[in-house]
Image (tube, rainbow, N blue to C red; front, side, top):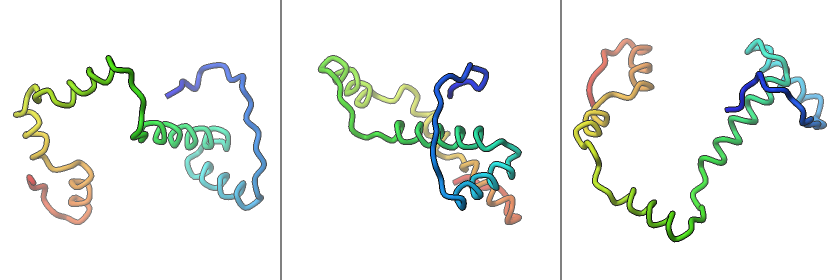
Amino acid sequence: MIEATQSKKAPINMRVLPEQKALISKAADLLNMDRTTFILNVVCREAEEVLLNQRFFHLNDTDFQAFEQALTAPIPSPEKLQQLLSERPVWQADIDAENGQTQQTV
């Protein structure tokens, strides 16, 4: 993510409906942020998601071969992967704790 301490030189201007401005302001206030900071955080997070979720990309022949090798290579440590897959997900543990359930291994 881009550091907030960098000098800001590129303006972004937009026009919104009054209802949209009120909604954005309310959400920003809830998080104790100014509207600009809130908008930048949300927009940058969404932009990163869009870029990370791309499923179609172009590679030259050399890069494609390296990519294909990485996909087909054996897993370096299948024991660690098996251990990771056997652990209860953090989000499930949080839900269990809220419901008064004890943590169990999947």
